Amino acid sequence: MPATTSIIATRSESALYGKVAWRIIPLLFVCYIAAYLDRVNVSFAKLQMQSDVPEISDTVFGIGAGVFFLGYFIFEVPSNILMEKVGARLWIARIMITWGIVSCGMIFVNSPWLFYGLRFLLGFAEAGFFPGIILYLTYWFPSRRRGEMVALFMLAIALTGVVGAPLSGWILQEFSGSAGLKGWQILFLFEGIPSIVIGIFVPWLLANGVGSAHWLNAEEKQLLEQNLQAEEGHKERLALAQVFLHPRLILFAMIYFCSAMGLYGTGFWIPQLIKNTGVKDPLYVGLLTAIPYTFGAVAMVVLGRSSDRSGKRRLHFAMASLLGAVGIVISNLFRHDMFIAMVGLTLATMGILATFPLFWPMPTAMLAGTAAAAGIAWINSLGNLAGFFGPSIVGWFTDLTKRSDYGLYVVAAALVLGSFLVLGFVPPKLAADKPS
Image (tube, rainbow, N blue to C red; front, side):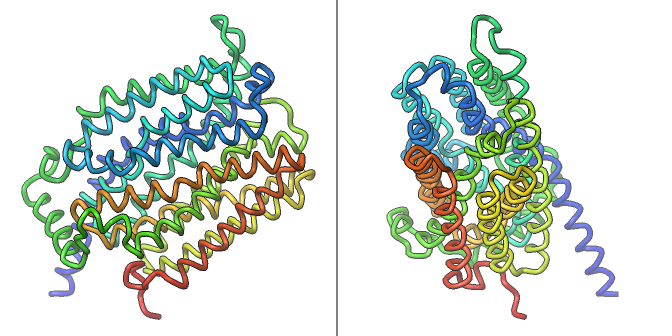
């Protein structure tokens, strides 16, 4: 009888978390699609922009793609702390509206310095969105359920590749010359406006946390809060000054840097790599770009769920990171064979994307309170500096050697390093690893 009661209680709790997920994840998912599309559509704009603005060389493009993360770095921690104080609804709305406006402003790019400046402002505007959402998920889900939730939220990256890539290619092909604008200008305009519109509605659609969720009854709120409070007792409450120098947070930032190096080192260049295999039509480039992201979406959910259930998060992360490195090497060695190069890019995307939902449950299991807000943002801001170095390295090597593969080998090495850091230095208890 007690066992039966326990099973019923477990099923009831799972149903409640399912209800919470269905209520908040779809909206966060749509928001992140808008965010990521505005961040990486520059990779498709590049296909036409360089002929209209010849001063934007591969080196300039790589720096401009990456300078976004310098603005992101500067305002990341303050933004996340402000979100904790102001509330998720208003702060996420503010972020989305401002980055949508800046993204639309990219239509005015006519020189390298204006390109750099707008990309920097875009990073400054968007700072705090991703770590804010990771923090927001800790308001609802305990660590043992967070891997799958982060995976479902971050599927937006994969879907942006699946849907956004063909959409971007189609816009470039069909709308060039409309209203006197080039195709790449229309691309920035069409893909910036949705962020503004969604941001306007966020305050009415998103609850700040369990306590303000009118769609939960008192018993449901109590259960959710009890589970979160039970976990809080095992977390560290660091002073704000300690967050920036805490050795374990620096370690997590290094690991995240390696994963982000893979994501942005390849992500900004996938359309160009596919074009280099001989595919010239922007629409076909977009359709082929969707293939790696489709498989990447599946890998994120499957590995995120598997790591939650098995508790072997470190092993899952290391395997995914190594798969990403192997895929990059394959795509480079066979860069003139479209089929094998696509297999390599698909394996690389699967591995790289899967590392993110496997990573975030580890540091969020460690921190509580303001330390969580600052710590998550600090890890994300340091790690995302890879978004500057990754594309810049690939762009610099491409201009210097007329080959993109040398820079991408550096990206692959970073992924290998990330797998070793997780296995060698992250304590099993933070990764929820179960003893074998």
